[in-house]
Amino acid sequence: MKHNIYRQWIMGLLGLLCVTSLMAESSATLVMQDMAGKSHQLSQYKGRWLVVNYWAPWCPPCLEEMPELVAFYDEHRQQNVMVLGVAVQYKSEKSVKDFAEDMLISYPVILGDAQKQPLPQPEVLPTTYIYHPDGRLYKVKRGAVSKHWLEQLLRDAALADIKAVKTR
Image 1 (tube, rainbow, N blue to C red):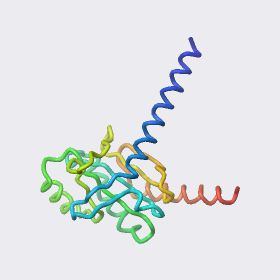
Image 2 (image 1 turned 90 degrees about the horizontal axis):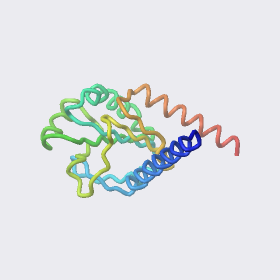
Image 3 (image 1 turned 180 degrees about the horizontal axis):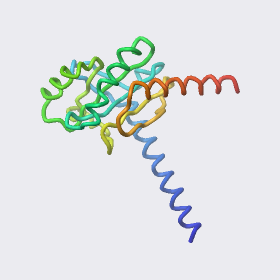
Image 4 (image 1 turned 90 degrees about the vertical axis):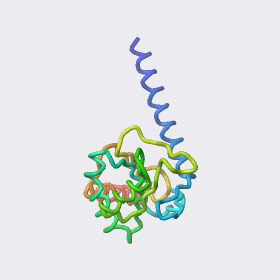
């Protein structure tokens, strides 16, 4: 009995890893257009940290994290960091545009519901996908992020990369 429960747990974990891997793989080839008309493909940001934040205008934690993301992007965009905001579950393009202007969003905003190719939608909002400069999905954070949390994540990743190079 105990063996079956363990096997089911392992199979469930493997299934979750496969789904996450497929989402990461499919999103790397995805082309998204931002509100200014510029196209973005995740693979074009190879060599830079990429933060892709899914949010909705009606979502209180999304609203709370927005100034943090703006501050993070404004401070780090010259240091090989890119932030893309993906708005989902909104009433109209104008409502997102007005919201982005009110929140002084300085990074590109993508209308997730208006893309030619449907974007995978997270189960929880906000959800942030962080891609390593080598192009792999590094971290998925469900819930609000802060500037401090993102900076610490990048510092920890840099230290881990340094240690990995030293052990080779």
